[in-house]
Image (cartoon, rainbow, N blue to C red; front, side):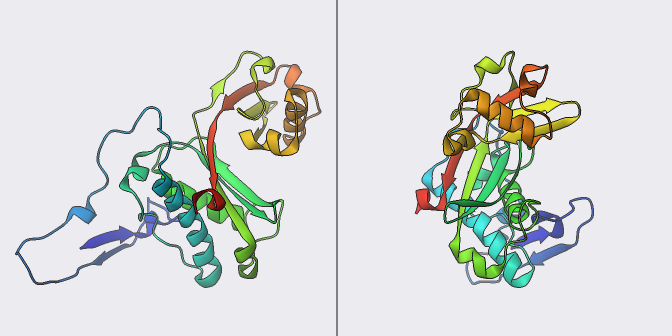
Length: 232
């Protein structure tokens, strides 16, 4: 027996749903097994532990399956396969798409208070079709795409730009109603030091280089980053 509703998929609205049920009959001991109808139980950890190899594989597979299903059928998979422990995690996540090492899309949420798998499914689809820097991904491109998932710690405000450590820290910058974010791996990939990282972050926010030294609010976070290549 199983149940799902239209709010369970990546683009579903949980406030207005259509429900779907499924029942299988088999021989054996009498009684109903309704365990699949119950949401995962257990307290949400304050600090998310590192993922196991199986959990990482499940997330990158979900990201790719979401994109593939949408491009082929305009439908989406239910993000509930894989280890149940993933549904207990509450943290931000980004999905990055690359083709031959070049960025093809990257979208995510810095913080998130819902289960992790639906978030990964949602931002994977957005990275594929809604990143304004790129045209929507086409189905014929998908075999050449490498999927990468970044799971974020909660951002913390810092008192000084000097506390930013490139390669370790992701950075969020806010000033004058504008904001921008770089994941931790961006500085390493681009070969940026601290000042260049922060200058580029200002430019990404539509501000002038050096804005970080003139009263910008800075927050840092760390990320657990893994790609399909890492979990094969």
